[in-house]
Image 1 (spheres, rainbow, N blue to C red):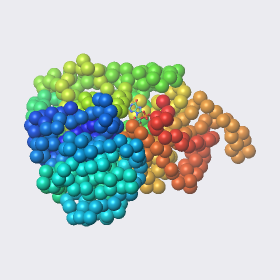
Image 2: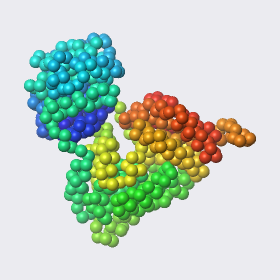
Image 3: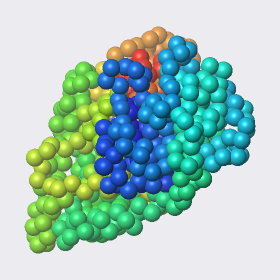
Length: 519
Ligand code: XMP
């Protein structure tokens, strides 16, 4: 693999994704990794990520100097570039000139003939975010680029296979960023582009068969992408020995339960056990309007319902003579990195997730998506022939519509929200914006009423909030600037078609300070 050394910024995951987009498998490792540990993994290349610190700060994350002596091709990015400069004998200075945002860099004569920046325009716009600057490249290194305030914005020593850029090639604001990644991986390090998510299918099917043997497997489907793809992979591997359990908590959006019960089963042929638990969840949520209590209540009921269903599956297994020993989880790579794989990450968030199961369930876990990012999981889902409505589904919280009703949850309020939400989803899709938008929560302010007028009559209805956001990973987000005529169409349709709603408002808050969801 290519190892991405994490110096404690969100950027490491983005870098790992860009490496894979270039057709090379990548994994994230903490900066505390030793040279011997790196060598043991026989990496084809190493990328040092950016980070939030200054190399001069006390406790600034460092790197075993032996890593750059291993003879493995290496690329340093931002903070990683400065760590390289410092370790190899260059100069990193606190120039006091902070460079942040889109910045013009000029490539040095000859840089456009080299492997890293070969064929690139010699003036280009890149994304910078740094305080310190490299003022002198290490001996034997060629300076490849500079900006108005940074004399050494990129350097290279092709003989040593060591390259670095001060800017962030992994972010889309850097005009030729992906070409820098590819230049390093393919031209400089000579790594072929032969990895793609599709390769993972055959490999995982083998691995699952080896793990599970003749035993039976159970899997909880949520309607989301991750569990759907994980289950489909396991189904490929063990066929009928997998039973999926779908707890319909009655808090899904319009048609989503049918998409699991009908379309997913048609596509995969999976054994499905549906538990219609809507009444149980509604009864438990009766009168509850505090967001955290809603989450806890739903989490508790979910576990109860799942345990009961799993016990039935186990009992059926006992009859058939094959024990049910395994539980499929749709754990993704970012979860793995955040829970320890990437020590030193600055920003960690864990959600109480519905579908999070108690630890004392007596199953071993099968986690076929542990090494994958979300977009790769989607690619695998498509390759496995899953319905696009499931594979392309935007993130949707486990507690579902319950945390999009501000106020207590009732059957009627759910129905109102469901209809408004369906209109928004249909209009966004018709406008071709599904790719651009990360997700668009639609929120019913059930405890708020406002006066309106419709026909000749006064109305006293509820507002619906639209919360379209753009994001890379949900950690930060910006509100999406939707076209005004689209907003007008959505507003007209909702106020005309959903009687209880007489006002539609737009949430124009970024995250931070607002979270994506309202509860
Ligand atoms: P926030 O609201 O924290 O949301 O900005 C970030 C992302 O997480 C989703 N989300 C949840 N997902 N259980 C989940 O499975 C939850 O309780 C939950 N709350 C928020 C949210 O939709 C967004 O994608």
